[in-house]
Image 1: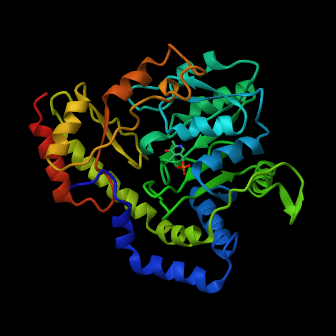
Image 2: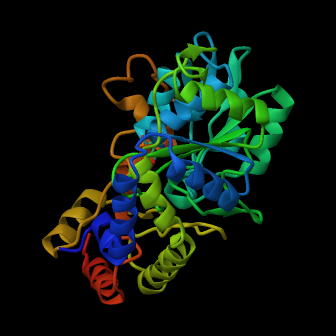
Image 3: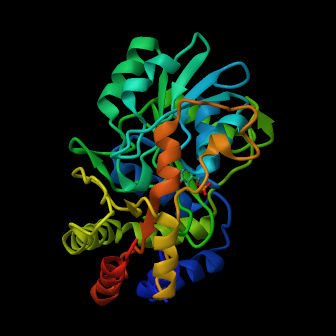
Length: 363
Ligand SMILES: *Cc1c(COP(=O)(O)O)cnc(C)c1O
């Protein structure tokens, strides 16, 4: 069986270093917000090219902390997309704000920047562009709209660790940016983890307080906070994996190029549009007979996934409150997208099997 993603293969590839890092944490005896978290925050901030980093418990929590750091909460609206992990929308509601969902660009699956301004109201406080599948959203117009209307930009970088946009890392453009280290992400922990990054001293300081009960001093809460700390053990693992992130992303690009060459002209299949800087968290094609295609791949021992089968605004938890009739491209993507196997340890021969299976498919 060829899996769609395979975090265990990554552990196996770096087992000796990861085991040593974990044993080091256990031996040292500092288990929460210790030297590994501090070192990883510095290293990851330097890698993305941002001044401050605050390690948190997950990508969802990173978004919640970022919103609270921006003083966004009840009565406020936040613009984002419905074509995303539910986490993006869930975090907005965790902070007490109301999500406002905008349609996507059908070629790149990121927010359709031409539709943002129509969604702005006097209550709008921020835009959360989601850099989906490893491809940054078109940040230049987003930053211009935000500036014009006095809005914060919070980048959802959960799927784009290492991606570039116009010569700089995604995650270095917004007022604040949020990463997830869920095991399958390009930079994945062996458990949960997340990070908030900012160049703004004040926002970063507030995010640091929110992370742990609003404490600047132990047991004294200066502002209301939560508890969402990056684990010392995960930080140690992530420090090892960060050293391989660029090499791993380069392999993902090579695999994507091989898919592109192998699948050019495959009937019915639309391949992803590839801007420079894409890091292929996922390799997502679309096909009008997507469900039958997925069945066919499964019969050949090939795992595929759907990111995402039901847009957030059509899910039971949200459909009554977030109803929108204007998300046609989002709904079409949900019917047609298919994520093909993509992870750095995927071998070329496995990729060839996937390509052959796709070329054999008779819709
Ligand atoms: C994974 C993901 C998140 C949430 O990250 P967790 O660490 O799982 O909480 C948020 N946004 C997007 C786009 C994601 O893919």
